[in-house]
Each structure stands twice: as C-alpha cells, then as structure tokens.
Amino acid sequence: MGDWIHPGVLIMLGAFLVPFLGNRKVKQVYLILLPSAGLVILLLTSMGFFGAIPAFPGALHKWRIPFLHYTLELGRIDKMSMIFAYVYVVIGIAMLIFALREKNDWEHVSALIHIGSSVSAIFARDLFTYIFFVEIATWSAVFLIWFRGTKTSKASGFRYFLWHVVAGGFLLAGSIMHVQTTGSIYLDLMPWGWGWPYLAYYFMMIGFLIDAGSFPVHSWLPDAYSTGGVTSVLYVTAFSTKTGIYGLVRCFPGVELLMWLGVVTAVVALFLAVLENDARRLCGYHIISQDGYMICGVGIGTYLGILGCVSHIISHIIYSCLLLMGASTVLSVTGTCKFTNTGGLYKYMRISFWLYLIGGFSISGMPYFNGFVSKSMTIEAAELIHQPIVYLLLEGATVGTFLHTAVKLPYNLWFQGRDEPPADIRVKLKDKPENTPINMLIGMTIPAFLCVYMGVYPYYPFYEMLPYPVDFVPYTITRVFSISQMFVFTFLAAWYLRTLIRGTPTYTLDSDWLGRVPGYALVSFCRGPLMAFGAFLDRSMLKVADVAITAVRNPGIALKMTPSAIGAGVTIIVVIFSLLAAILMKGI
Image 1 (cartoon, rainbow, N blue to C red):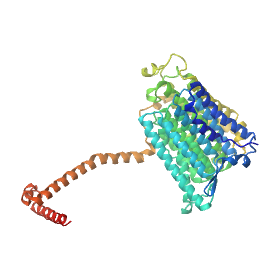
Image 2 (cartoon, one colour; image 1 turned 120 degrees about the horizontal axis):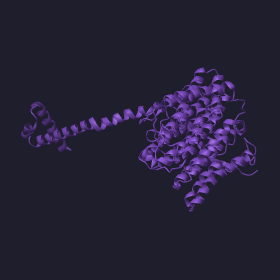
Image 3 (cartoon, helix red, strand yellow; image 1 turned 180 degrees about the vertical axis):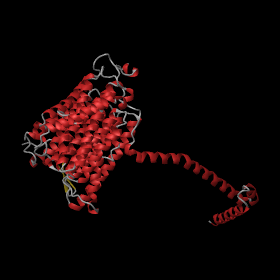
C-alpha cells in the first residue's frame, strides 16, 4: 500500500505549468491529461490500491498538517467525498474539452485551480481546510468571470467576490466559535437548536447557504452565470453551489428549517425566471431552483432524503453543465444568447440543439433521464414523512422547470417560427447543419451520455457509489405515468400559447430590489437634492463669513451689505459675534 496522492492538490499545482507549455497542441493534451491523472487516482483509491475505504490512515499521513494545537486533515476518504470527487473531475474533463480552443492561458490556469480547489474542499476533514480551499475556489471563480473583459463581467465578478467573502466570514466566525466551545475542528454533524448557545451554527449555516445560492441570498448567481465568458462560466456553474450544499449535508442533516427553505428556493426561482430574456440567466435561475431540491433533501434528513440530495447533486452537476454548454455554444457562434436577438438557428446548429435538449429533459425530471431518478428520491422522501405541501410544491416546480428549460429556452434560441436567424446573425453562420466547433460538441457529448445512462440504468455504478445502501425503485407505473402526463399537457399548453413565451427585453431584479432600488434612490438623492442643498449651505456660509469679516473691519459697510429682509437685529447679532470672535482670536 503506497501513500495516497491528493487529486485536488495535484490538479491545482499542475495548473501553473500551463503558461510554460509553448506548443498549443501540447498544451491542449496537457489540459486533458492533468485532470485525467486525478481520475486515475480516484479509480485506484476505489480499487483499494491505497487501502480500504473509508479509513486507511497509513496512506494519509502526509496529508495531516499540524496547526496550533490541532491537526489539519486534507484527506477524508469515504463514499460521500468519493462520489463528489468523481463527478467534479469527470465533468471538469468535459469542460476542459469544451474550452480547448480558448487561447487565454490564465483562464485555463484559473479553471484547473477551481477544479482542484473544489475537489480539495470535498476531501477536507476539518473546517479550516474546507474554508481555505473554498476561498481559493472563490478567487479562481472571480478571475474566470473577469476574463470576459466586459464592464458587466467585472461588476458581476466583484459582486460574486463580495458575497462569497461574506459567506467565508460567517463560516470562519461560526467555526471559531464552535472550536472554542467544543474543542473539535472537524467538518461533522453539528448541534442545532434555538437560542444564543447555537449562534455559531447559525453563522455556519448562513455561510453554507450563501455558497449554495439559496433564497434569499442567491442574486449573485444569475449575474455571474450570464456575464462570464463563453467557457469560463461553466466551471463556476458546476462546483460553487454544490460545495456549499456538501457542507450542509455534512453538518446540518435533518434541520427542518432547511426543508422549508429548500422548497421556497425551488418555487421562487421559477417565478423569477419567467420574464428572463437571457438564456444563461434563465439557466441560472433554474440551477437555483434545483439547489432548492437538494437543500430540501438535507432538511428532510432521512436516509432517502440524504440519498435524494446527494444523487440530485450528482445529476445536477452533469445536466447543468450540459445546459450551460448549449447556451454557450449559441453565444460562441452568434455572439448573443438573448431570446429577442436569436431564433431560426436549428438549421445551422442541429446537433447542439439535440444535445442541449437532453439536458433540458434531465433537469425537468423526464423519465429515462438522470434527473427523474434523483428528483423522485427527494419527492418520495417528502411523501414518506407526511409532508404533503412539500411534496406538491416540489412536483409543481418540476412542471415549471420543464416549461422553461425544455420548451421556452430551446424554442426561443433555435426556432421562434423562423427558418432563418436575424440578418446580423446569419452573416456569421456557415451554410452547414452544424456551426459549433467539434471540441464543444465532444465536451457536450460526455454529460449528455451520462444523463441518459444514469437515467436508463441507475443501479450500477450510480447507486453503488452513493453514501448509503439504496432501496429505491424509481420506475413505477404510477410515477412514470403521472410525470409523463404532466409533461405532455404542459407541452401542449405551451405550444398553443407559444407566442406568449417569446423573449421580452427585461431584466429581473428579484431580491436585489431590496438593495438596488433604495440604493439607487439614495444615490440619486445624494447627487441631486442633497448636493444642491450642500451647495446652498456652502454659498450661504461664505456670505455670512464675508459679512462677518467686513463687520469686524468696518461695521457701517456691513450694515449696507446685509439684505434688508434680515433686519438690523440679525445684523447686530452678527456684528457682536464677529467682534467677540476677533477678541478671542487676538487673545489666542
């Protein structure tokens, strides 16, 4: 048995070699080989090369670092961390293939650091190691957003940074309070209750929820996803929120507050997505909605609830990556992914459409796609603990997701009843069935295959990799028939009213209204009336000062300078105070 090699640290350190590889082909091969080496390490770990899972301390001694009176542990090897690491690395490879044509070396460096730090956070055994790697992931994500170079991407990146710094602050504060109280630094099940003794855990939960993109602290997410680069946004999509939910799974399973917060997140995000005109912002809101299912599963807290949460995280990373890839191909080829500027693209981007549609069916929970399997677990878990409101709201959210991601978005991007796209886009397209670069199509094929395979045959290896034994049969006649019936009638209604689901040039403020509208009003007040009032006071004080100085030097002239409306009495008072001031100044 050899020493374990940390796949996350390997990917992070290997990222810094990218700028020094001169040949572009060599660089592209290296971008695929580096995370593939991480995947090989994970496979060897699963095969027992470093010892049996979950514990093989002999192989992990190099990843224990003394810190103050504690020991930081970078290697926590169990079924929970392994399944997260697998999907992070596999989808990371798909994303890097999708982004192979990107010429900015530092974007690739940031992408690899983001993948590696996210994997490292998953393997963290203690709170401080987890926070450290989450902060590295935050910084790399900020640069990935900034690399697009637009004014909006710079603003969104800074906003992303601020939100995650706040999240990190809450996590660190809560962790320090927890360590001071209990003496434990481990990322494990935390106490929960109401009152001041649990303040540390309130702070920790807030930090996890911000990172997870939960309502109402979610508004950073659609901005980041819609303003990032064509390829760079993919990395932020897959890993940021899921690492936060991983923290909730480890620390707060069974907290009922999370169940209700998850349901609200799942439903509210759908309503916020209704008027969206940007395909990537719409995907962002539906990613928030799906995060709600996961948070709800954590709150349910039963074996099936946790299995539903973890399995939906795995499914979601795969299909959300595919959805954003589909929208990004349109952005890459046409320069826009706004519904009001597109349509009629099917003739020129057919393969991209069908690959995207697999992601749309998966996120909707269509039978024989992976989202159906994972969503069904959470929904049934709610039913088994006799929560009919939760059950019905999650079922209803499924219909809304299908309407937006499987009908509205593809219809507006690829069709809109047009045979040809708008003229300004048509000139950018070659007269062939697929204008998307081949590497992007290959990158999309990997998650598309996983969406279908995990949906058709979830038992191996998907069920085998989950943290607990699975005794759940997703494909029952009742379940398949009921969900299919809902989707059929939703599609028929949407098709009949398809003119109403076309894009409109709107921008959804959602919970930002609480900050932006009063904030803009305050700024306008400061720039307008307040500045005018300040200028008036400035002029008035200068006049008073002039009168005072003149009064000291020549009281008679001061009386003539004073407006008659003020009156002689006021003038006399000014003169007296001026004389007193002059006497005092001479005394000084």
